[in-house]
Length: 275
Image (cartoon, rainbow, N blue to C red):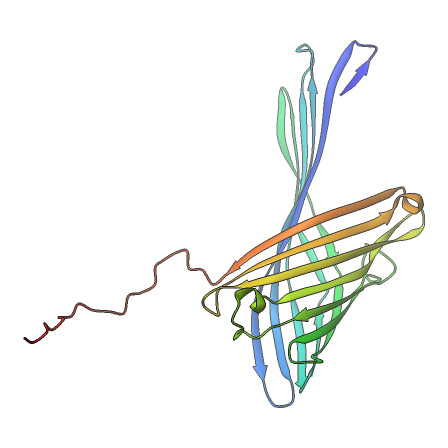
């Protein structure tokens, strides 16, 4: 709320909403040498920024403005993986995608209310190379290392490419354990990421630590997943901005909420005991 010598009081609200969804159609081929896969990816998203001005005095006219961009286009992802005894390796490439679409500007400032259709815009999502290495060093323990490299130098977002490195450990017990709590898989890991922009001419780093577990249920295809992540981004002394976040995740797998299991029994006569 802003006041000028207690004569004009108003509230200015500025909001931004954005999202980007990806739907993929996959094809995979398995052979003795390596596993191959390819997908066609369709991206759809939007970014809406709005300003709303509300005056306390009815003698002034409130106003609202909205700027919306639509993003959509098609890309592809190709990958290969190889497994040999206790080792597994995977490599994938996601193509650069030029996301474009319609752009609108709406305003509501009585008595004027209208929608302006602007020239189509474009936004380039960078290509990405990802690879992962997994080693199972005992019957119930394994570790994985991931490396992602974003090719941003061919986009308007940044002149430098960025990377992300992650490492994790997993404990996978045998399902034949007598106690249910001994059959719970555990996961622990973290990652180190370089963001594609700078503040005060200094690179911003994102670091996170994660922990998760899976609660197995009576049937092998039913389980409950629980995870927690602590994230820190930036530094208040170097960048004048710092974020700290704690995220909890909860997932359920294998529950049919749309129908009941088919009963595979039929009425039958039970013979009486002979005297």
